[in-house]
Structure formats: C-alpha cells, structure tokens
Image (cartoon, rainbow, N blue to C red):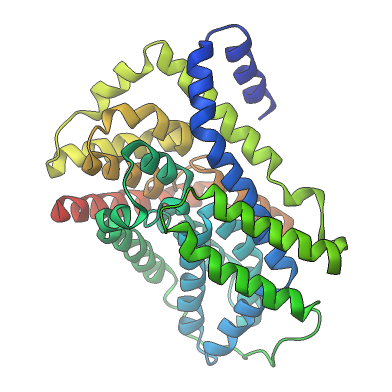
Length: 380
C-alpha cells in the first residue's frame, strides 16, 4: 500500500493528473470517504456496546440447536450487515462472531467464514450504501436510492441465492448436525446497557435515513457524533486508534487517483472497446465480465472507475456493478472486504488456502455474475 500511496502522490505532484481533474475527483469521492469513516466509527462503537454480540447470541438461540438453521442465520446476519452497513463493515464485525459461532456448533470455522466473505461481497448490490462502487454509481446516475433498489433487486437476489446454493452443495454434510445452544448473554457481552440501548436506537434511526435520499455522509456523521459523545461520557476506554479506517481510506483514495490518472492518458478508450455497448443479455454480460475480470486483476474500486464511461445507461451501470461487486470474489485483492476478511482470519489464528479459495471463488463469480446479469436483462 505504501508504494501505491507514493505513486498516487507522484501523479498529483508531477501533474500527471491535471489539477482540475484532481479537484473534481476529490469533490466526488470526498463525501464517500466521510461516509466510510463515520460508518466505521458507528459500527465500532455499537460493537463495543455489545450490540453485535447480542445479535449473534440471539441467532445462536434462535437456531434451536440445528446447525443448518444456525447457518441460515449467519447468512442473514452477513447479508443484513452488508446491505445496510456496507460489505467492509460486515466482514470486519461479523467474521470473528461467526467463527465463534462455528466453534460452539462444533463445525469447521471455514464453513461460516467462507459464507461470510462470499455473502458480504455478493450481497452488496441492493442499496447504494452497501458498497462504495454503488455510491459512485448512484452519484453518476442521480437516481433515488429506492429507484436504484428497484433496478437491482432481482440481480441482488440472484447474488445471494447462487452463492448460498454453492455453499450448501459443498458443505451440506457438515451443516446437517446439531449443536448445543448457549445459555444466554452475560455481563461481558453487554458492558453498559445504556450504551447498548442507545446503539440500538441510533441504528434503528440511521438505517432508514441512509435510503431516504439524503447525502449518506450526513446521517452517518450525525450517528457517529451521537455515539462518540455518549461513549466519551460513559466508556471513554472504548476509543482506540484502530476505530478510524485510516489505511482503507488511504488505499481507496490512492486507487482512485491512480486510475483517474490512467484515464487521463487513454485507459478509458482501451477499456471501452473491451466493454462493448448495447443492452442485450450478451452485451450486459460482456460488460459485467469485463468488470469482474478487472476487479480480480487489480481491485473493484479502480475497476469500476475505469469502466464507468462504458456504462452510459442505468441498465449498463447495473451490469457493471454486478461485475465489480459479485464477480470480485476470486482473488484476495479483488475487493477491500476480502483483504479485511483475511486480516480477521489471521488474527483469529486461522489459515486460508488461497489456491482452493480462488478456485471456489472462480466458480462462484462465474455462476453468480451470469445469473445476476440474466436477472437484470429480464427486468429490463
């Protein structure tokens, strides 16, 4: 990442990225970076209040001792977190919780962990707040969040169901057993019930605000400030340096600058030929495939930005989002969420076999991208 940041700085300082283009880029992505930072703070403090541990423990009891039902609840938790809090938040907060759940259920942690990283990526299509690429697309098209959801609800459903089917086919024998349901929540899970109730209230108000059409950075920042003030009064020890997503933000901004610089020197024309044109199923699949390939080659953020000029209509924009969101599950660097997931796996002492991960991801990306693109073409 250091080399990438240095390269981005060089692009600006040397004039390789002209000043007016740099200013326009910062004006576009600045609110998104504020949103990412604010949502990370909200999620971190809500977790410190015990909210996600309470939800996970509730899910474990709701599973009634059946591993398959517990897995469905893990999928629902991951999907909900990805849709409403963003895929990056989902993997950071949910991964350690589902690993703990897997231990209590007596199954291999990779079953729930792989489900989390796949669903975090492939469920991040439904709302603009689910993924930075979606926010950029909404910004480009200017459509209301509910109009955005109306365009992509069926592809989003395909993005959830196809990976779930593949995961079930692979792990169905391990998911057929039973587990001992936990006794309940203890005081370590809820250090301050007042903060827990406040976190629940803030989340309950924030989620509809994020789809109201208001600039998403506004309600996210308000929620972060409310929680930060409450924690400052009642639990100041919860504040840690890693609650601010400094490195992810630097990485994202650097990627945007490098890709925009490449655009200024002819990258857009080259990729436009690869992306094609038109709104037939084959045309949309070509664009989605180009997005998936570019995402797994570099990362889905620069892949989206590089191919955005080829997505000149809402339907083609949807196809591009399918490719860069649902198709970015093959390589470890395909999305920032996968890198964050790997970091969580490492801190939990779990090893990832990247050869198997990439092979399975290739199958998932191919099937999911094709099914979601077909769904988009059907809605069109």
